[in-house]
Image 1 (cartoon, helix red, strand yellow):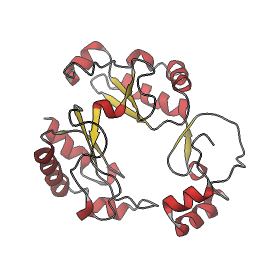
Image 2 (cartoon, one colour):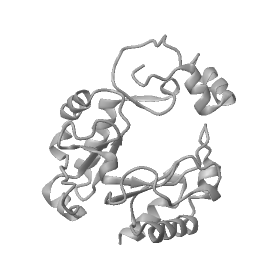
Image 3 (cartoon, rainbow, N blue to C red):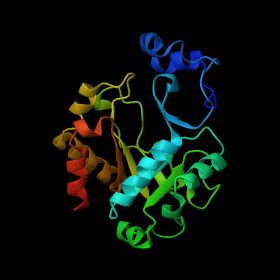
Amino acid sequence: RAEGMTRNKVAEQIGPAALAAADRVGGRVGTSHLPGARGLYLCHTLCEIGSEPLDAELEVIRSFLDRHPNEVVTIVFEPYVPPSRIADAMGRTGLLEHAAVLDRSQPLPTLRTLIDRGTRLLVFAEVDGGAYPWYMPAFSFIQDTPLGARRPSQLRCTRWRGDADSPILLLNHWIDRFPPRVSDNVRIGTRRFLERRIRRCTAVRGLAPGLVAVDFYDRTSLLDVVGRMNR
């Protein structure tokens, strides 16, 4: 409801065949008659066919940070609720103590500096970023590559969002069809394909990707490739 997703908007975004499939799974989607308790959920495009309570997923992240003291985690919220509600959830789940505050006017700290400070969680928001020092404006710090590629040849390195001097490059690397297909993304997720695109975009943008976003990460060579880059 907060997202304002009407049935017509859903149909426009995913197409009639996908909408019919979603109806079979989740009932009539994109309508105003939503059963269940009101709360905060994580979902994407169609909350009716897949969502998770926000607090439960934040607790997963907190548990990960507790178990892996040398890892840094980045969250980019596409929020449809006030920042105060996200702040409350961050406080309830014990994540605020991990949240970093970055200064846009200064060079970014290294990952090691964040680890040594105990601020290993970077939280960005596409909307209302800056409402809190730790709730940072995503596209002030991040510049990214275009979305919407329907085939591998349409993956581009040009800037879509963010500023030319935004210090973190986000490489969007997936085939944008609904529902997402494993086969599409496995094809562009090989080590050779990923490394070639990362090298190409680094040359075009003069900045190596700090974030690489894919679908079905566990079916691709993503972790191997970014591990090699980090080393």
